[in-house]
Length: 329
Image 1 (spheres, rainbow, N blue to C red):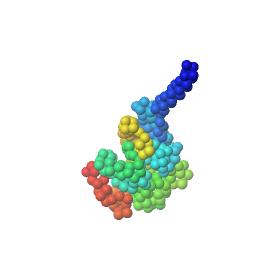
Image 2: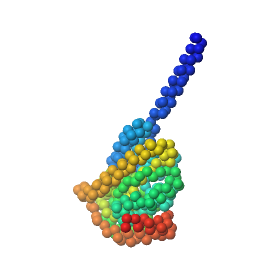
Image 3: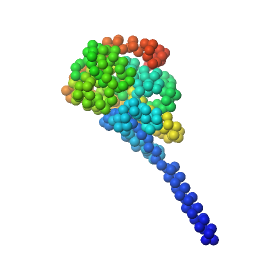
Image 4: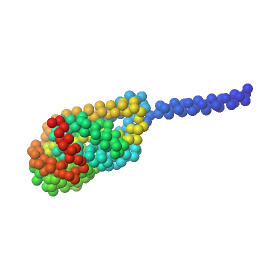
């Protein structure tokens, strides 16, 4: 009897330990890393903090999303690479950077492609959007989750920019992607790629003369402290895309995928409205700060840029350009 008990007790102990271990593993929290290059004060970042709480709650602690702002996990190129490697789960990026893997989608970040916000919004609810998302996923394995209105890009400098010739020779900071260099190059400026985290110091030290970003980003980056003028060129209606690593996507159950995607889409909708509200009020805010804000006739700029968008060497088909142009008309 005693021999039998000695055999049984260790066996029960091992079985219990294994059971507890399996139970613990089944209830372990998986960390999702969300990386972006923007300041913590931006609406894009703030909505992610709320989203992180919702993900943790609605997945019963199966997932916890940790948010890494201000290029803390690397610049735009680095976080896109991390996404493909699966070392980062989610990022904010833009069509210009997605285009490095799937060129067709880059059209969305080019200047004077969208007429206005309504045209932009109509695209994101179109069949063309779905086709581009699939093309990007087929090319990279990564998944376009949702989109946020980043704002309409304007030029800041230490002089008014009222006509194309005012940009001649201007050293203007742009993101490091062809979509952003086309506009300044076309009007005779000198586009200077620079990481977003370096822009303030670059302007302050005169490494660059100017930069271009939406009004909420100009405020968040405090660029108005080192630039006297904002010229409302409204040259690009810009998008932040939320993209998930294909590795992460494959690891999620369909149920958790649905939960997380909905939370992130709701966050994007909230940030979009916040950006639009800010754009409506910020001109007056900048003027109160002593910044010179200039209305600009966009047509002379468009007359120079738009013919370039239809050249044969652009990374999209003429049909894609025509379909995009026709949306919402």
